[in-house]
Image (cartoon, rainbow, N blue to C red):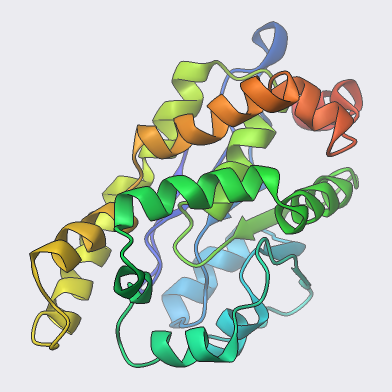
Length: 256
């Protein structure tokens, strides 16, 4: 698996090379995961052009897109598939004051908030619709997809988990891929702490929640997996019966 670092986005990687069903490997240069690309220099542009991306799939909300519009790459088709309900205006206003963890005001903490988030990605109508349409797009031949959310960790992380499960990647390799986001998140966390450490809402609880929200933790992924097993009969059943994925056809497209 190859990792690409842009000046403002450190969490881009090719799923190619992971071992899947029957010892076959995921094709290189077809499926890239990462975070939003809304700032780019000349070197970044050279790297992105070298990936030959044809389609960008953005799991962010419309509000997130408006705040940080996606870079428009020539010849690339953009798809917005939000995984959550649009936030109320009051929630959006609170997020814009620099308090990234606005939900703490409601008695929540980052760790449990993220666990609920992962369950919602699997279990809500919005999450299921987004991932169902995601797999419909992926069934096109001769395409190169870059799928992302804001940081490339959670919404894109679940998308990668579903892809890799469909392709027969082992649970150990799936977990390792998921946790790779922490390499990029360490750099992001340093920036975030500097940005908010002098704010009136900054306190030990906020600091810990910041670490929890901007980290990839096995417990978050397990929250989704437990829900899949207990409610949907496992990830393969979920892929086939909820997301309508033709597993064999999907494997034919992306394994070699």
